[in-house]
Length: 153
Image (cartoon, rainbow, N blue to C red):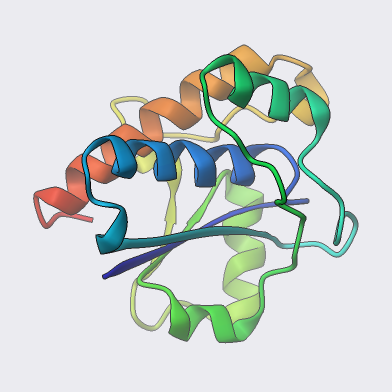
């Protein structure tokens, strides 16, 4: 089983979008038993809060339900429990390294590493552009799934 943790600052926009997009992709491929997928925050700001309404609406627009998801903070223990910990931007990655005490097993990645457009996932908290975030997340998750299936993740 491949265990993936998607991570962003607050766990209310980008990382839950990635969590539920990836869950939908693996379900569509009939692979849901081969994956455990979750998301978390690097900060404590939004702990316990549900997915931000515009992010939830964007997922719903694409037929994806995220009901029941609430924000949680990533812990150092997560490093040992997941095969891949995938951040949404460089700041997330730096904070993930700090929380985990480094990356001794080379598990920390950025989502857009799995695309033809490496870089940060657009942060809709600041831009308000949930369409751009959707494109980045969808493309990243599709690329990540392809890389896993090819043994290159």
